[in-house]
Length: 453
Image 1 (tube, rainbow, N blue to C red):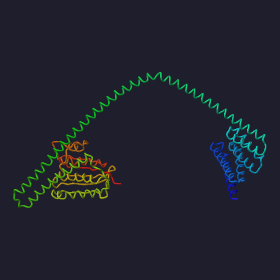
Image 2: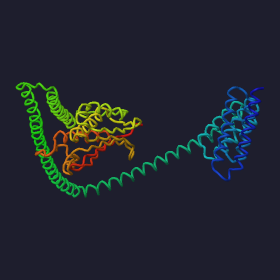
Image 3: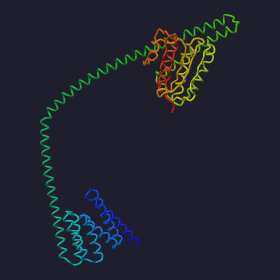
Image 4: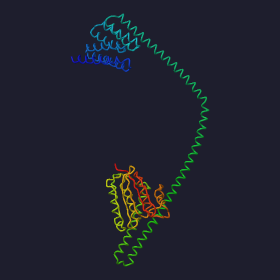
């Protein structure tokens, strides 16, 4: 009962779908494909029900498939439906109806040129007729089976013969082409040999030119390295010899003279500390510069509070600020954060503050201010110091990593190297350095850093 109900629902759904598709068949080829698919489903369901011996359901499905196939002219599906119906009638010993349906399936198969299907149906029908004792009609179907098979064999032979003829023709054409190719092969080989020879000559010439150019570049590079080494030793010797000599002189003065005035002794010790601090800062900058040039630095960006960093570095110079009676104007916003390498930015801020403290006269002023500009965090450090000439600034901002400053050192070498390191470290962190200065009018350093997300 459940199977019958399912069948009725399925038939109703398919018929509704097919009627709708039929109305659209003239408009789109896809509608025909949908109809064919639905009829094919009916035929498959009929075969499945027959295998499960649900013959009445199979009969109804096959009948519906046949009606729809004939209605829409889908004769290939009609062949299947006729065969399914023939099987149904034969199952119930209705030989006449069964044979009629099989014969109709044979007729359509031959009409559509479905030779394999026709062979199968002839053989099947001949067997059924033999079983019921109708040998004459059985023999007729066997004859038609044999004739069709012979026809197919002959067709196959003809196709094979045509294929052989085509193959022979192709081989002849290929042989002719090979002959023509062989005739021109000698000239082609000669031309190719000349081209290869010319190419080799050109390649050797290019390789020689490149090698010569590379040799000159390497020579120039090593000359620069040698110059760098000489300037480095010169910088160390001149930069440290003076401060160390000064410290030695101060200590000699303390040892040889009886200094009873504590204030005088304190002043001497303060000067000594300034000399030592300057020498230490120079050595530290040289170390940072060396790491930068030898690729030993790794950028590890993180969120940085610029206000905290500035405050920590100002504390390092508390004694010098008090001694020189500076005015410090710190307007760095505590809500401003950068995204960069903490150690590198710390070196930048410390170097620039060190320069401002060192080259600003007594009772001078150092101002610090932060803002967001051009999508970057801008930290500005201004001082009322001795300033710099345009040549000094140009030398600091020069991109050549070999240059360490003028040999005659008409300005402090520590400042030259320190600011070059600042520029290099900022650029490694996707930032930048800008300097505005003139002699006796102070300096203004603008530090650009990426904003923290």
